[in-house]
Length: 601
Ligand code: F6R
Image (cartoon, rainbow, N blue to C red; front, side, top):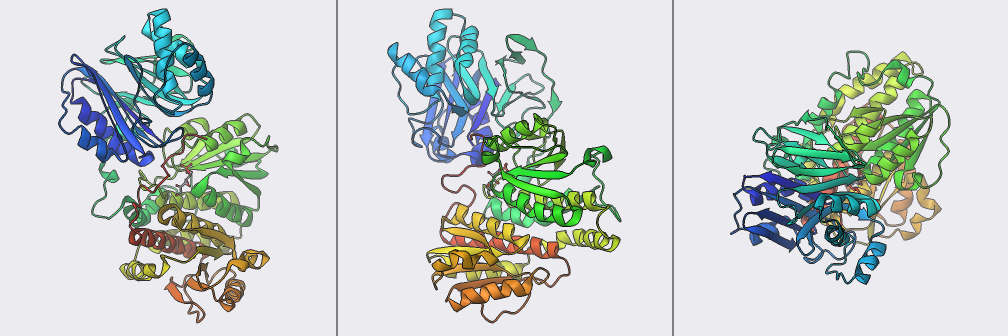
């Protein structure tokens, strides 16, 4: 959700900023902009739409002398996604970029307007730069004016500000939105809202904590908390960017679907032993005296949580509840003694999930993060983390992150259930785990079949995705994938729930994607699908069994374990959404209105 970059040094500033923004663009792509300051003064460029428009606009511009620069790629929260609302926002002699939301911007704006300040944009961000210049006129010390400014802000923010009043510095502040500072061997300073923007540039980095602010200049990072300077802990930054390239696939999402088999193997490395599970991150005492598990997440990660709840109740015989983070954080939750609070997040930066986690930390609950991004805010906040090891996920529609979340959760359910399961059941699960990398390999035949079938699903008045048991959350996930990238209306339901209302919508123009695994409630599901077929629904069955009532069939393999069917069907659903969206001509990796990493609530 929005991306921020900054740079201090004598490199080609425009290129460095744009290349950082390129890495962050999938997080928000409504508009982009940069502002640079060197001996020649301040230059700034903004463009509505994707980053390529800004690249075209700046094609002739060069900036290879010592200087500073900031950049931003935007996912609009306040004001339309146009050029005026694009960051950086300009005062008289300063520029600001910002991620997050300034909640009291109306009040601050009113105060400034009364003093004669006029505003150009509809954003909350613009208030920051005017407030800064207002305080700078009073205090004449720019850094002091910056401190006063952030002292007035309420909400969540990561801010970078440059000003002619302090020409060699970038001022920064972090509260609730991630911000990372890094340096290289030549003492250049790099700033990013995610380490993806710094990879290949900075050698060591520091991940700022909430309440930290300061200034950077050549070779120096000055970080403060409540007026006191602190020494930042610097850690080495991983330098491999190869895994974030498309490598011949049409979209990152497609590449990430194909990668699932190998990232799932990775997620098992060292954790799946010959006969059991071992998590070095978890001590035996951490899992002792747990009487309840609360899962909490958003979106796709919430679907992983829903499926996990079935697994934990069944395998570990522990009671569970599943919470949508945005609801949980405001409901004054009752967290009982003995609760293990598990948050699930690809990015580790989802604002609602992070706040829910902080709420849980204030209780007696033990907290565990299942997360894909090391050093993210959620990882740093939770008591313990199991990393999902999916690698950078760039497609906005989550695929491999979901797959690895499911795998890690399943393994954790086994670890917690090793005392309650029979040895046969446990061994069957261990055997099934080993089969998952194969179950998720994309077969050319299946992909081609789905590609051909997809042309029949481009119209109609909507989709139902249905399933039972763990396949019900998978149906929810299938529906979410489809709506995100195809913009077609899709809903997921438990198969048995159709007759309680939704069946009223059924006709031949309602496409029903039926998950009919052989291992799990096959006959029950089949009856539900027959009821739909009797009402002329168009049925696309995903199943290992022949099914004469289906209009379309996508065959999966016969297997003995529900989780093998689960993972194989997951791949089918992902490919189906992908191919429908491609046929509709949509930008699969950057679907409209969405952004990766939702750092605002
Ligand atoms: C859907 C998708 C979103 C995220 C949700 C939570 O494809 O990616 O629904 O799952 O925004 O994000 P994380 O997992 O980063 O907390």
